[in-house]
Image 1: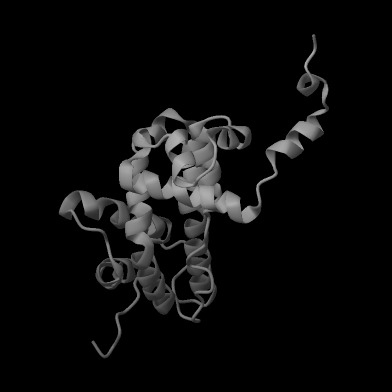
Image 2: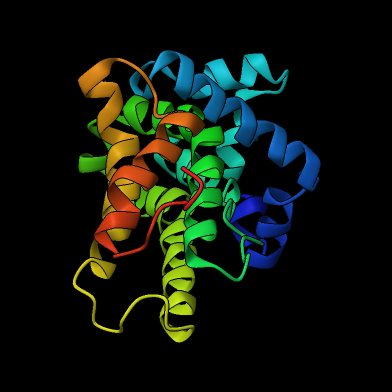
Length: 209
């Protein structure tokens, strides 16, 4: 005997899967990312998220078929351009502000990256979702800053260091916890920009210093 569900059109089934309000969906996303940061990706289960958000496990599985799909959706929903609005009219000041902005959220994002661990190498969708959420927006914002600086004549077009600024900024965020056991906070990143990034671009430090 054919089930009623099997006979229903896809649009009906899809509508049943999308009954969550945006606020409730965000609550699920916040919960799974928070648990990943504190427990690690491997320790997080759909059952645990259901319990912490007071919903049934079937609710989660109706929306997202697997844990990787759920986490990938949560990562994409968390996408933020934290450098948005930084445009002081000076590349030096833009980079200083970007350093402090990055330092303010580095612990949270770096902890998430570390907690995802080898799952990123095992699941391409998960890795791409992480890049879309935490990497691509900030790199694009940094590149826009650099392009504005070139357009103003602060740095010559084709300067060899331009290509490496995003790698320098994001590299130190990821590496410092490994080297020192500490996250790269706002003060550390501000110092890094003054000592490494600005000289690499041929930009002078504050004359008063």
